[in-house]
Image 1 (tube, rainbow, N blue to C red):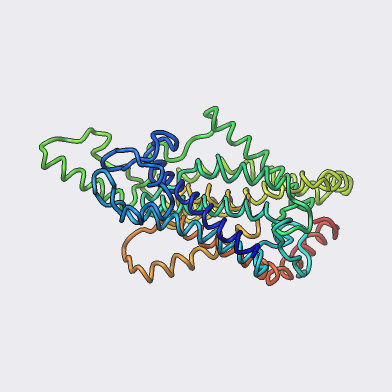
Image 2 (image 1 turned 90 degrees about the vertical axis):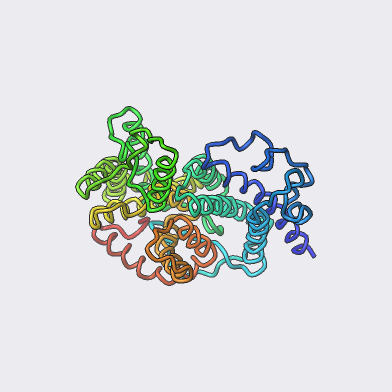
Amino acid sequence: MQHAIYIVFFFALGSCIGSFLNVVVWRLPRGESLVTPPSHCPKCGNRLKWYDNIPVFGWIKLRGKCRFCGLPISPRYPIVEAVTGALLVFYYVMFFLLNVGPCAYPGVLTDLGNPVREPPLAWGRDWDIYALYMLLLCTLLAGSLIDAEHFILPIEMFWYVAIPAALVWHAIIDVPGARGSLNAAPVGAALAAGGGIGLLISVALWWRGLLPTSFADGGPPLEIEREQHQRELEQAKKEGRELPPEEAELPEYTRAQLRAEMRKEMLFLLPPLALATIFGFLVLWSPALRQWWGGVVSTHWVSGFLGSVLGMLVGGFVVWLTRILGTYVFGREAMGSGDVHLMAAVGAVVGAGASVAAFFLAPFFGLLIYLIASRKGRELPFGPYLSMGTALVMLLYCPIANYIGPGLNALRFFVGGWFGVHAGV
């Protein structure tokens, strides 16, 4: 009976969140405020009644039409509301009824041991990690819908919502051995500290204009942008007018120019990568420093915060390095920069190992959807597939980590032996 009450509650809560996500998906890519004006019909502009805004049922009551102008309202609105409610219910059932969910250890560059028996998830103890995961899932749902329609990923959702929430949340709630905790071991924490400081240095240098901005005049146009531009040219020609010079031509890049832009991004990555390497090496190499740093990291909020930072850096850097190397090899932009921010948010929430697993699972979802949709010759946004990979990893990372754990332990033992260290790596 208790679970039944929670299931009804979370479906209602998720539907309300889905109603807000509809606002985000419509307004954010158009640069409109998420607060004002209040909910209104996008066609006639009339403000909706409060009872018209009841998730799912409001649309059904109106029979899918605006009560003022009678024009149809997209069925996407109730679908998003129902899907969001269903997702919260599904993950509640998986976490707290079937005990399928986050691990008691994150898996990569931390104290990954042999496969362990996971303690059962309990609502009274683990509601906080469920709430954090659902926040990420709702953010990914909104981002995926925007990316699928506009081929953009607004980074505000990740840097203003998901990443700050994850860093604070893990610093407060993480306890070693708890499900979903990201408490970092000494070397992982050192890599996070060095990489985080390096990232702040790069941002400061870029802010002061000492580091160049890649694609300052706009990135290479996508197929959908070329098609839209062509329609605009044809419409202007029919009306007997000419587009302004800055709108008449899309920016074009040669292979050499694309690689030059990637070198600018490599410069941005150098400080965090260099400092992460230096900090990690020092902790491995110096027993005295390792002992002192181990005492610092033994504080739960420090190791939880740095574990989340490590996940953010690993999640973002894996995609960013793939973007740079792919562009260098193929001579065209390999991945969008928005994917970097998305995976940074994923890593901050679920951890370094889970974010890497999600990244490698994403292409399989992309291939499956591509085969089903049969969209030959059409560029596809990658954000939705990264989100699908993340949604799966939220449930199945435990068996994945158990499977790859022995190999990672052997690698850790080898690295520790190379530096004469077999503990605290």
